Image (cartoon, rainbow over all chains, first blue to last red; front, side):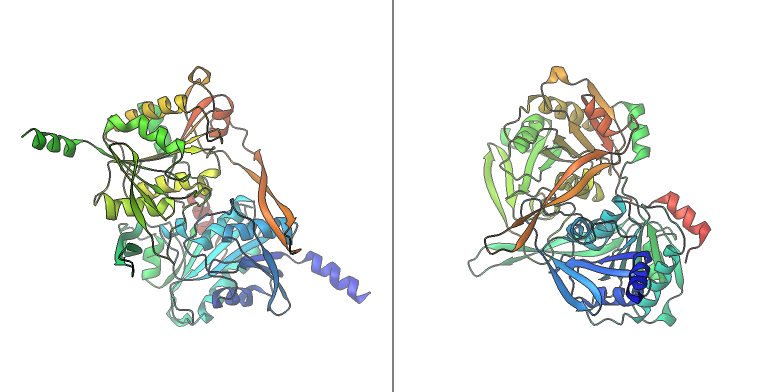
Length: 265
Length: 265
């Protein structure tokens, strides 16, 4: 009888899908699991290798593999050979056999503010869930080190997830959360922001291989072209957590109205 | 003297960067080059292998290669080992050493309407150019066959590119153009549209390899959840060319205002 009661309770608990792009063994995903494990039934489905910068890539031309893991104690976890977006698709169709109540992605080792939302595997996984009608949040931290102090980030994650789960939100809710590096006493608060027009100015480093053939590494310098104070870049610079609400309708309605008027073609 | 005059003229001609995601040998990119080669100095920089579904992926963890090709007669062409987005970055920094006046991507063998704008390598290359401040257009065709009749598509491309190049447009102008399959007499016109909320309902096909291990292929059924008549899906269904103006500011301003009011966290 006790078992049945427990199992009924288990069914009532919200299902929290967790993924990332750094890979299933990264400290960031472990911190995310730790931060929210008491809020529901957590299931981890994450890539078996780093997938940073994969954007919204999906695997079409080759098959995918997945394997059940034992990395998070009692929490169910799976690694897949796919991209972050593939992980969300596989989780819904083959692991959970239902849509989770919320999807959390991260905590990414490195920032995903401003234009980086578009390149980020972390945010693309969250966006995939949002497209599917699953409220979703991507978390990233302004510290690229694998041994970064994640204690403040964990507190922030818990606060934001608790807030979002406390009310019935739009099923397409999608948030891009970036957390300043450092300890909690340095963080001034949480700011709702817009995406800054800030980006990398790319330069490729040119090198020569032992066979005298050239190859190129992507490098770049980050530049902020957006001077307004309600952007994620401004917030992070001033030690606030930035929360940018994100949408997947990419229609430029202003340009649409212009084109309808000017009739270029 | 004649040579000098020619070279000065060459300098005045607008530079048209062409890329795609199907790879540099695809009939679609050849049709695109043919359609616009008289409008300026065309330079092709495209992937050396198929990159469909790569979304906005960039290559961070490995170096890139590029090689000058001889595939388009007098027109300069390069293949790279990177994604469509990498191609645009390499073209600007290492091949053109300047921003082109316009970037064209495609013609993709297959549709990129509705939510597919997010997964599409074709559109991500165009978006990368738009982020860089280069007006840009992605072209896709509602025919997945490599031997599709591209004659109507070529006419449509020429009309739209001519129209866009005829006026000074916003430097971030970005258009997602989808062209119905078939001949010109079937096409009813060109419609400015919004992105439909239409997407694939994914199902993974489960198979077993010779070693009795499971693997999964992404498959899906396309469903339109958007019944309005100003969408790209509606236009294509009714044999119009769809043109969706696209933006890279993903901020959901409506949700931003709501979150500022409700204070969830």
